[in-house]
Length: 389
Ligand SMILES: CC(C)(COP(=O)(O)OP(=O)(O)OC[C@H]1O[C@@H](n2cnc3c(N)ncnc32)[C@H](O)[C@@H]1OP(=O)(O)O)[C@@H](O)C(=O)NCCC(=O)NCCS
Image (tube, rainbow, N blue to C red; front, side, top):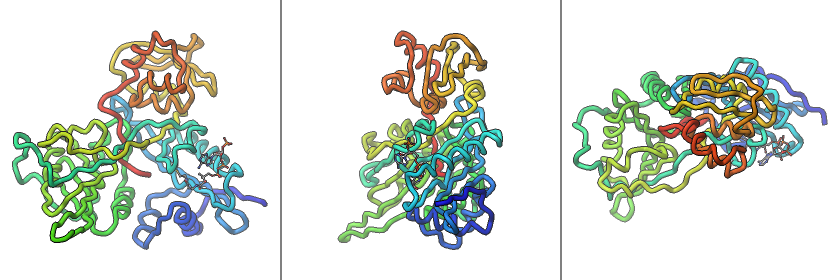
């Protein structure tokens, strides 16, 4: 079997789409195909051919990632990863990722990131879990915004999101630049997201936020209890947050409000409701995985909540960095904290404590330093990523 690895051209795009459809069970209609074509830069992709058949594929998006302290760095968003079932477990993914990671670094991004289909694949390639997502259900019939917090009417309009993509991107940009873990969305990515939510997507727009949802009807036996699938609720301000939630919760005929990721782990929503228990967590799962490449640059660019100094070592290369609240410099001094590359991916945004990583055997550190290290590397609000890519 002779395999050819190469950069795809425009003529290959439909074959790449078919490979992606086969792998992930999606079906792209014409509009989704165009949105997908707009969103990818094929020079950042690598494909594998066996004869004329595309048997493997991987690429990256040019993206930006917000770090603690709100520095924004280039991110290679690893994506469209698949290998045909006829060719799996022969090292094709490994070879593809080597090429994609090299390409990301050559383009000047200090870090790669991805959203993973399965939990067991990517740690071996240096990716660690950096943000987590919460799946929730709220029974709308039992709860509302508490009377003290009900906003004055008039700040939210119902709109057609496809007609206001630029406005949504502008609001999202303001939001994501203020939240560690979030990544950018271009107009093409926003359109692709709206296509993925599918026909019938509704949008509530506030000057500083928006919510996207679909209603799945269920008339019951003369007891209407439609399901509202909330795709996203993005708010730059506390006023926008409560105003949008008030509209979402004001949907008569709706029973459950389900959300895959609209309610972050530290979302203040429960405090605004008549019943804090009403936000039921159905699942918590990994969301953004990060693979730091230029460790010095990343740990220099992020902020820290306290002044301190730690020497960190990456165990695969042995490189050591003296990290202070202001900078990170190469050093030969003995390390305070030795980590896998994936462990540093989990540490970078401060959403996972050093104590947890040490107990999980991803980080080695003198237990006497754990309190200081948790205070130094930790971050609040909890890093969050709400963009699938
Ligand atoms: C996941 C997938 C891309 C793997 O491709 P592959 O060419 O079979 O992978 P490789 O042969 O290069 O495997 C590389 C390593 O990853 C491991 N690995 C691959 N797939 C794995 C999986 N699903 N779970 C756990 N480990 C996996 C291999 O065992 C191998 O480990 P080792 O080198 O440490 O021994 C392929 O199975 C696939 O297309 N799956 C469906 C689509 C998908 O989930 N894509 C990922 C999207 S984020």
